[in-house]
Image 1: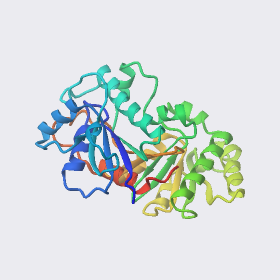
Image 2: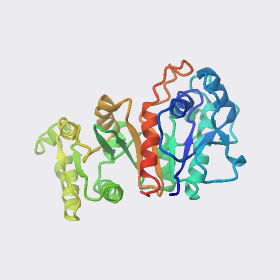
Image 3: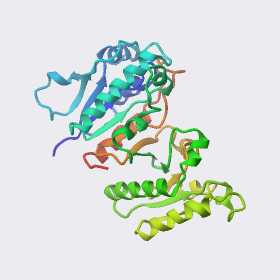
Image 4: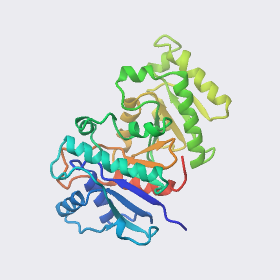
Length: 326
């Protein structure tokens, strides 16, 4: 059996990304067999390992003659010299974390990786570095316009129509075309994972899903017709479901995927029940991409307090889905 090649970008050096990555591999967590390639810099890994009291366990990618051998390897990326102990956002941290991610994605696009796991970046650091992207998914949309942000856990699964947008702009994205595109990507991706296993529940936008137009017209004019059109194509889909009850209906039922119409509508309930174990999965790509569902946590960076469970689940899910394509 060919082992999957899984790239892992270190994230913002001033955040908890390097810490949770090292804890995931050094803590005897029984991760799936694979060739894991860390995209980052040796200096950041070595500094973090000293802080954690972890002996370096990775090898240089370029120094291994067998590219299919299992283990943990480092792809030392050309990036600004930064210190992991300098917690907090900075332009150099933004440039470094972007270079780690950029190199991992480039390798995946060349077919050298079957999955990419991304540690958290700071949107503020990217902005300070002059980068135009609001996050990982925004960058991926440059190459894959149909990329869809979803969140997975044993307790709940959520897909987002839009992600890092101001609320007024997110509401404007609730259009027939955007909904149809999302439903098409979900159908193709979910059928590759477990054909016919999932039902999609589309949340309403307004209180009580509009109350037949009394509390808003978007449900009647836009959402319900888009759902009905998708249903006619054979997709198992319902909606609009009142947003104050749809997540209760999907809780503890992994076969039900909630479509949330903007970021906080989906992420507030998801993080309430799965903050420490949730995984961000990007669908609509030719490779697997996963990430912890938490941020850089600058306030605890460098203090050996970060919980690696979400990173561990991200790695496990990437290995489980690879080498299947989305």
